[in-house]
Image 1: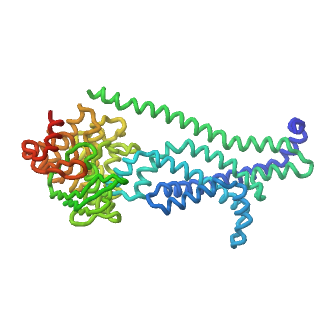
Image 2: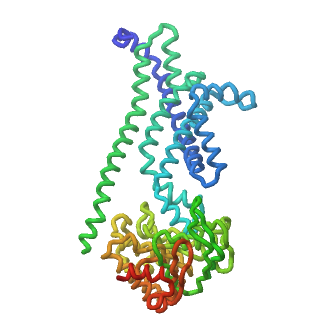
Image 3: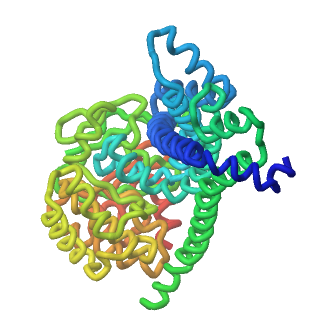
Length: 240
Length: 240
């Protein structure tokens, strides 16, 4: 493999087919974005459900989270791909990938959202109730907006994991970056080095900036919190 | 205006309200005093459905308050001021004041802001409209919370120990605002330990101990000629 990475010929062979990789990279980006939207929607809905006062929504949310978190993503992808046709649902590998990865990470994001909601002091919901806001209105306008800065760092973590996990599509034969890389490398002359190296770099380029941004945001937040706890004292002094 | 009939409230095995019967008349300033754990706060919280009685009935404007109708009934009839202020930290002062009028009462932004500025003037904080609550002192936050309650323009305002979390120095600025409100036609139910204030504004004082209403009467009767030994003992400790 090292020899191939240093070999001019294997790189030339690889670059001759670069459009194949660019296209597959595009598929991975698209799957990531769509799966992320699905995961966020599911995460918010089930996260809110798991903090409900009623037992039934809590039970349903628990069931979803525990089932999805405690079985392998690969198994879930296979089940989607192989079982859905039996109930008459015919969707392509890419769509299966979007659903599988989105639903899987929705369970993790639901837990992130739940923890965020539970970290907001009870007085906030009581103030909202005393004004006459319904449960959904309270979540929408008062509680969830306050959770954003708390849940953003773990959420970014989930986004990074989600992007990497879209590679599960390779297993069910969708033409994402991982699948294309493997396909190309194992066909014909079996040139492994350059495609796998570039594949890794491309995933890295998607994930690293996101993870770095998340980490920086968290740092900024910590610094701002330290400042804002200093602030009231300062204003009181100024006022007196 | 508010009627509590045979209210019993259990928290687990602990009975915090034992057959509480109480009528609050329109425009009345009712002050509830008593030692901690006597059920004062729970009594007030039953009046706006933040707590639902284990047995007994609560009527607001002649309508029975139930789990089902509490959001709507409370929205149109009462507001609450909390010990811990419970302002919404993600919104500035103006946002805190205009949210309910806009989202719940269908006012336009312009109408809601006019209302907000009017009540900010009442509590003496017009210049703070655009700052965030965390930059305000405790006394200022509580005055904003009172303005927020006023913005709902309900006939009843419930105060649950509004000055207990404040520095001694800022207690007075909040009490001054409440004295000012007391001269208006609003019905006020106030849980407090501020006896001087109680004497000044109360039409009627209620003394609670161990989950029951032990004694009630006009401030004159109450502070000068209390009947029960328990009341005398409590007042003796607090009025040294």
